[in-house]
Length: 162
Ligand code: FES
Image (cartoon, rainbow, N blue to C red; front, side, top):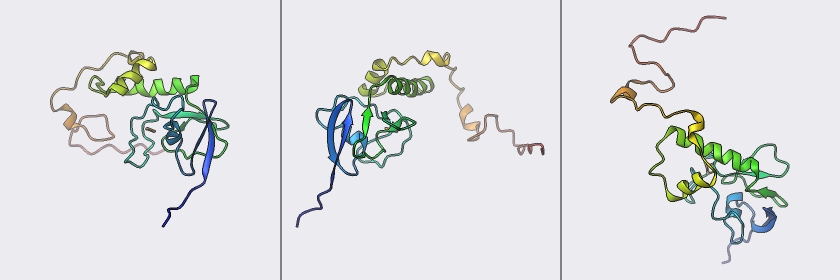
């Protein structure tokens, strides 16, 4: 028995026409042989065996007539879609995502791909200030999620009524 044959969708990626099956994501289209940025679309929260979570926004691309950048890992392709992967807007956004990440965590052990993207996008985490001193041993365990004060045992004070 033959499997279902889906409709093919044609889109343009950086001026090159790409055909992928209906239901594919833009990132799938970027992985098609011959697409200019196919091997170099940054992805931090995507993996082929995961459902898209749209968490990191490192994979954003510009889609013509879209008000905002879209995450290529989660957005389905549409017939006639025009995608730009290397515009100034895309590069600026990817740079900022990588800078914010590097400004908050130690990236020295990140994968070679991530290290390459940091260089390629001119990441400069120093723009967000100098690194904070490490927390004293055990200090982080005393914090409550969503709050920035130390635990005192006293219940939180109610907000004043308007
Ligand atoms: S890879 Fe993280 S939002 Fe697409």
